[in-house]
Image 1 (cartoon, rainbow, N blue to C red):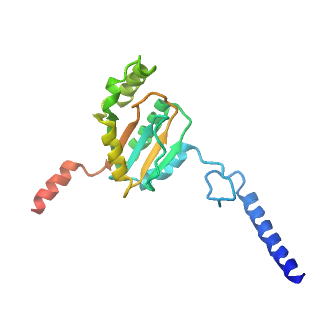
Image 2 (cartoon, helix red, strand yellow; image 1 turned 30 degrees about the vertical axis):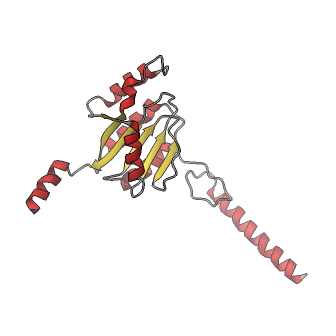
Image 3 (spheres, rainbow, N blue to C red; image 1 turned 180 degrees about the vertical axis):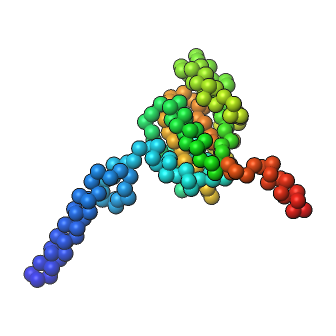
Length: 196
């Protein structure tokens, strides 16, 4: 009987401590919790802002359409925004532009040029809005499977942040391959030449 009372006493103490911990964390967003607790997630913009200082050369950020698959690579982090694709793209570009240590090389799915309105309603509007949002940024088309292969390879060693939107038009994802913001590839090439 004493053993049962001791076990019940310990269980009650653990339960009370866990309940206190939950009460202390109420109202906080994005806190780390055990699998037995449920946390209210932070807004996606705050999650992205938390990643930006740590991201650099060879990391990627992808603003993805709603059907982009959830990836299992440990290097790929998916953030579901529940928001409009173009509003999300604008916020992501603004955040990246505001980070002096990185700059994006922008890639688009080559297939999008061949997706017509009769095949995917909304395609013409999506293409127009992408052109508008990416004007002057040097976005380059690459076959979708090649971009996926690049992500798969990069995700083995480097963090990729996937930011999913609500857009339901195929091949509208925008791939930002991050590069060093303060060291241009031309400068790297000149330095390497001097090293020879």
